[in-house]
Length: 88
Image (cartoon, rainbow, N blue to C red; front, side, top):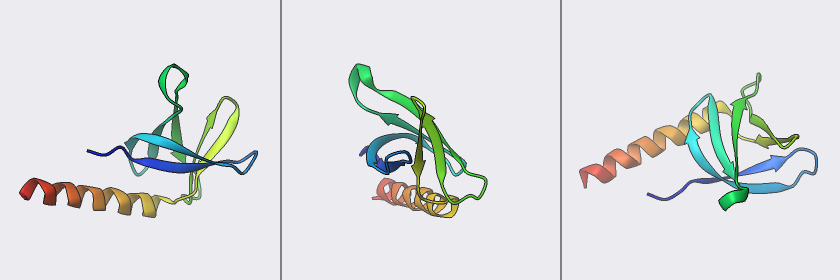
């Protein structure tokens, strides 16, 4: 199984960073920033508007600029592809 990576925006600088997804649900996304001993976990929670996921790491806000509907669609497609691969 391939690791999923997503791009997050650091709101302070506008810079995009790529992180590893540890766990993905419609209401939250757990990610890992960095590698090895310097890695840090972060939980991104759905914003009140439902249009993005936000979290904070070392005092800086990070945002995944996709909404709940888009993430839910990603999860459903992932489930379907896993079912199909098991049948093959």
